[in-house]
Amino acid sequence: MLMKVQMDTPASNEAIRQGTLQKLMEDALSRLRPEAAYFGSENGCRTAYLFVDLEDPSQLPKFSEPFFMELSAKISYTPVMDAGDLRKGLGALSAGA
Image (cartoon, rainbow, N blue to C red; front, top):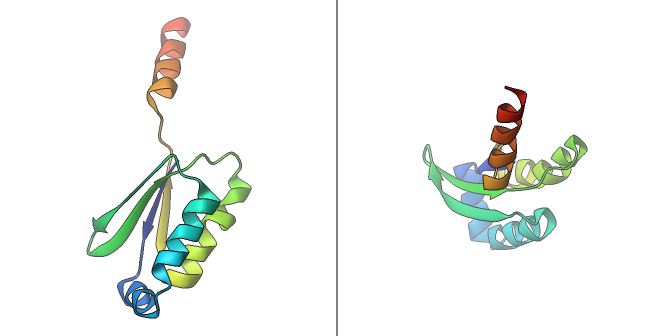
């Protein structure tokens, strides 16, 4: 799952001023254990792209709430596949034809 976290600029500016943004991100990364994490900007907002293994939808609050609460973030989840998943999915199409 691609978890996109767009941080509110005033809230993230304040977290930087207070010295809490780095700790928040480190805590989130240790809790989420993403397969990959990238950081940049999108639509003028600091943005994190976290590739996480979402085993159960009940994990959504655990993953999302710190970003909502601390950074007034906008969060979206997008299903994604790795190469093995794509190969398996395409194989299932071929087997069903």
